[in-house]
Length: 200
Ligand SMILES: [Zn+2]
Image (cartoon, rainbow, N blue to C red):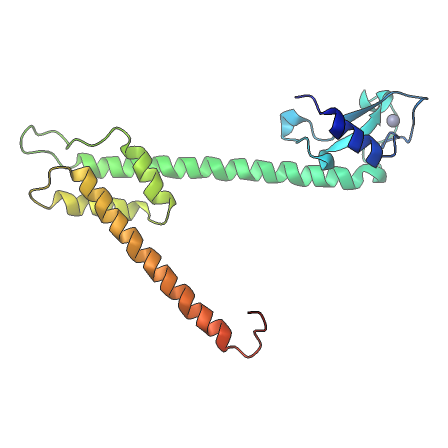
């Protein structure tokens, strides 16, 4: 996506209308504002990833090294940003894998139990995987879900088994939230009891 005129102007002004690589200035050369880390590689339109460059430097024709100290600060920020974006993508990918694994485990437990009427697994809503994702994201883990499924299946006279599982999990979640609140209260008292604590 093209940079806005305003952003270009701000970067040009920051760089004093000179090429940050070789120092060339208008009207001797044509200046442009370019990405240090290309957007295709995760670079952003943030000013820390933008640099004023002359046509020669931009095309790689200049003898000046892009590692020149004058751009080191900009490049370092951009590289840190690119590295952080890669890590964020890794974490997102790993979380997705874990959630899919959780879904498979819950599915396996659910399908172990069959209705006496038709010897098929019990019906459940189509969006059950999303519900598993939610519970496993907001404070419970897959073992809680599996245990809730098992407990529900061992009970008699339940029509909507999936709804019963969800009800069990909500109650468990509320219990844990209450425990967490209690812990915070206790820790808060502990902080206030310390004579060195000066922040209130
Ligand atoms: Zn230049």
